[in-house]
Length: 81
Image (tube, rainbow, N blue to C red; front, top):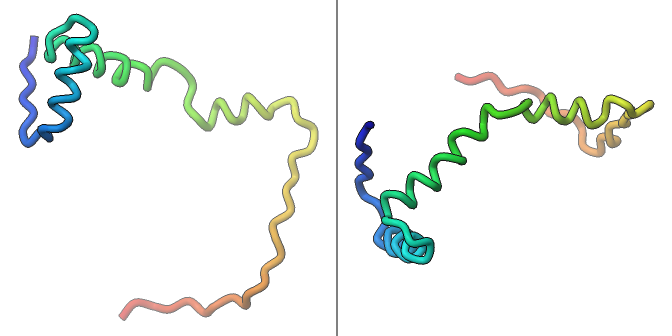
């Protein structure tokens, strides 16, 4: 098992972590493990956001969206010096 050291951890966050751990009957170390485990394992557990959006609207017939009318004149591009 690896050891993790967190430097400059805010005192207020540490106090809140201590209270949260105590309320669940765990050490602060065990509580941190329980917080990190789902946060780091759920990212690769399913399809990405773009895939989920595409699947959600796959059965829709017409999703054409008209862009809003431009009210300001286009500005000329400025080249960096």
